[in-house]
Length: 495
Ligand code: ADP
Image 1 (cartoon, rainbow, N blue to C red):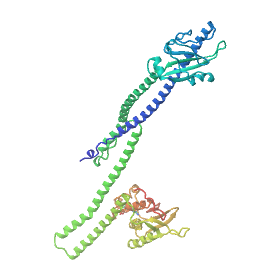
Image 2: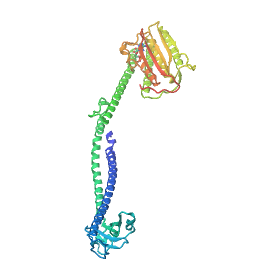
Image 3: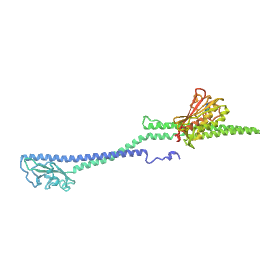
Image 4: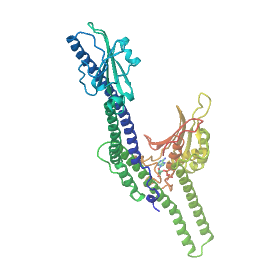
């Protein structure tokens, strides 16, 4: 089963989620906006309706004043249709009442019916303004012949040359209600249509926005260990997707570099382990080809011992490096006295130094103001092997009769262990490579593994420090290990 078949397409794809999100936001906005617009528009329709009613009332008052001027008399009380006032607004019902509420005159279209004489209507006298109310469902049915309600306006008028009277005008609210219903159905129809269009547009937009991600996924699937040199194609323009691709490509650069280093490391390790095995095999074959003396067998065993020691040392070194590479924590962490470690290293290196006629010259740091010697928090065994590596290298490369200086000093929050010799130094072109794994200066036939300095630097970095090298002005070179002083475990540096 391949990876693609394991990763079945989810039901809620990112595209669907984005579309639903756009749609939800758009729906809420559209709904909210529609409610506001419909409310405003409804208000306008109602106000406009009332304004027209007031307009009719004003026209009526004007018409009445004309009649009054011609026949300056009180309105005779009428008890039937057809008065002297020209009521000519179809659909509108008019009525005049005297100050005591008695019907004086009414429009023909009202027949024998009268408009309601409510408390609100009567209040127009005291209010001094037109009173509007919605009344009489039954009356509306009777007057208009259809359902609905009546909007009734009552206006108290007190002319100077005539007794005061009430003017009442009523009109069916059905046209207004119809306008409002039409408006609502328009919006109710527009919302789903808008949502449908927005949904389709969001779906297409989401596809467009997510297309580069699909492309990245396709390209990423083709990246395997065999094609680690491939990179994701950069789209035109400098948007977020381009930024992400640049970041992924940079990550691939680092992964490729780490992978290649690992490959080289494994190949070099295999080669280095193969050599002693091949030497021993060759010697064993020669030895077995004919009967040998005891002395020859003893020599073979010595060489087996020597090669085994080398293999053992290399395996320990490789394990240390692998541990550092994997970022595993140190096995034992405790405050370590740098003086104790350096003193121990000198003791161990003394026989080798004596053998080569080299003198070891230690200089230890004075105790600090608190009377404490420099202490590093870490693994004492690893720290010992780090300094031992530097001292043994210095002894190995020193001509007989020369000295190797080992100085411990305190610099602020750092303790420095400096190992200097008067040997040939490091050729300038190899100074950068000297800490590389399996690197040996060409021509140096010391029989080392080329791992000593790589491990020493890895140990220093595991302890939050580092190692540097420089050639001295005179003969020789100087390795300086810098470690943070403290009783708490330092943050390791990346290798
Ligand atoms: P090895 O175990 O082979 O010595 P190292 O990593 O310790 O490997 O050293 C790498 C190379 O650096 C060696 O080939 C050696 O020639 C060179 N080197 C290390 N220390 C010194 C020194 N003090 N003086 C001159 N060359 C040195």
